Image (cartoon, rainbow, N blue to C red; front, top):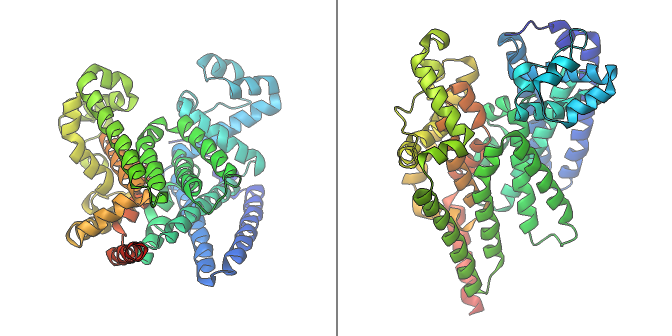
Length: 468
C-alpha cells in the first residue's frame, strides 16, 4: 500500500490531455496498419482494430485496479521509481548517468536521492531485474512527457501488435480452429489483463512473441538471406530483454526454441531423408544426454545453488506454512504442492502437480479475488479442451505437434513454464502473472483442428505418390 497522489497520476489536466493525444496517435497508427491489412482482407482489418481496442481497454482496467483498488502494486512502484530517476536527471545528470549505467547499490540510493528529488521504491531498485524494467519505462516516461496514462496506452498498443504478429504466422499453417486461435492469441482476458499495462510481465510477453515471430521468419523460405537481417536483430534484442528481466524464462525457452529451429530445418528438407534422420538423431541424443547427465551428476545442493527460483521457493513455501501471523490463514490466496524434497528425484516427483497448478489453477472455486476471476473461468475452458484433446483423435493431434515447428515449441514451452510457475509461485497472484505468456501457446495446442491436419496429410501423401 502506498500514499498515492491520484490527481497527478490519473486526473491532472496535463495527464488527461497527454492521454487523449496519445490515444489519438495510437488510433491513427492503428488505422494506417488496418488500411494495409484491408487491402487483402477487410475482415482481418476489423479483427486487428478490435484487438487493439481490446488491449487498450484491459490495460486501463489493469491500471485502475492496481492504482485505485489495490492501492498501487508493482505498476505504481515502477512509475514512482521512474519519477525519482527523471528528477535526478534534471538535478544532477552525472549522478543520473552513473546510477543508470551501473549496478544498484544502497550507497548510491542513499547518496544520490533525497526528499526533494524523491526516492526509487527500494524493493524495485535493489532487484536488478526490476530496476532494468524501470529503465525501460523511464524511456516511455520521457517520450510521453511523464504521463502515466499515455505510457499505458502506448504499451498496450505494442502488446496488441506483438500478439497480431504471432496470430498472422499461426494463420499461415491453416491447422487450427480459427475461432479458438483468435480467442487464445488476441482476446484471452487474463493475458490481456496481466500483460498489457506497466509491468514486468508485459515486457516479457512482448519479448516472447517477437522471439517466436523472428525465428519463424528466419526459417521461412519466402525471405531471402538479406531480408532476414532484421529478424536476427529483432531476435537478439528481445533475447537480451528477457535475459535482463527474467533469465529463467530464457533458460526455459532454449530447448523448445532449438527444437523449433531444427524442426523447421527438417520441414525445409523434402528429399534428403538421410539428412532428416541425422538432424533428428543429433537433436534427440543431445536432449536425452543432457537430461541423463543432470540426473547422474547434479546433487541436491547443486540444484538449489544453481537456481535462485528453487532456493526462493523452498524458503517461501516454509514461510507460508509456518508464519500465518504475517500472511494470514486464508487458503484462497495461495496453494500448496505438499511437502517438497528439494533433491533431483524429489523435484521430479512434484513435476505433475506443479504443471497442473501452472496450467489450470486457480480453479473456479479458488478464484475468490476479482483479479483472479478471469483465470478461474478460463481454467474451466482449458480443462474441457484438454479432455477433448486426449479423447478426440489424439493420435492425429500428436502427429501434428511432432511435425510443426510452432506446435513443438509450444508443447515444450508450456510444460517447462508451467512447471516453473507452479513450482515456485505459491501465491495465486504471482502464479497467474508468471504463467500468462504460456496461455496463448497452450491455446494453440488445444486449438489443433484434426480434420485440417488429416486433410494436409492426405494431400502430402498424394503428392508423394504422384512424384514416384
